Length: 185
Image 1 (tube, rainbow, N blue to C red):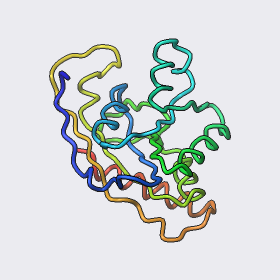
Image 2 (tube, one colour; image 1 turned 135 degrees about the vertical axis):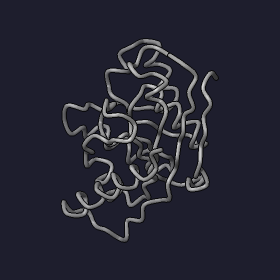
Image 3 (cartoon, helix red, strand yellow; image 1 turned 120 degrees about the vertical axis):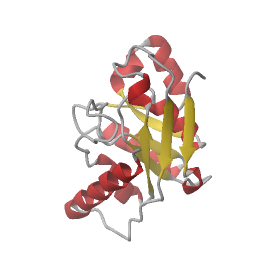
């Protein structure tokens, strides 16, 4: 409401069918910015700690979010993702695994889970670069000045009939990183 959000490339998101949306993560505002910018209902993989807050936990569950334990390979979250994808839904996740303090033009090291999930499910990945949210909530608590938020949605990443192998997971993770970086303003 107080911040101007500019979204480009939303035509790259199929209106229906399973997809995985992958984006950079620098602020608490990234999930709502991504949801509004994509113009499609997204089921977010969110850190399990968020579900322990009574009001927030209830709200994000109602918004189709599901928990992930970031301290281990979470089979439960992986299965939930597959279930949503089989239902034709869009799953959104932040492959850095947490908010990064490196500034909006720098990605932290990406985890390989998004690539593995895409290869296992055989669904397209949609890269997204989010900029400006780090200036709106730089410390995660205070809303300083009016700022513009950009949500730039890239073209689907073609899996080129890749099978699930460690080599392809690493290769695809590298492609995800390059595509997100290209979308950052």
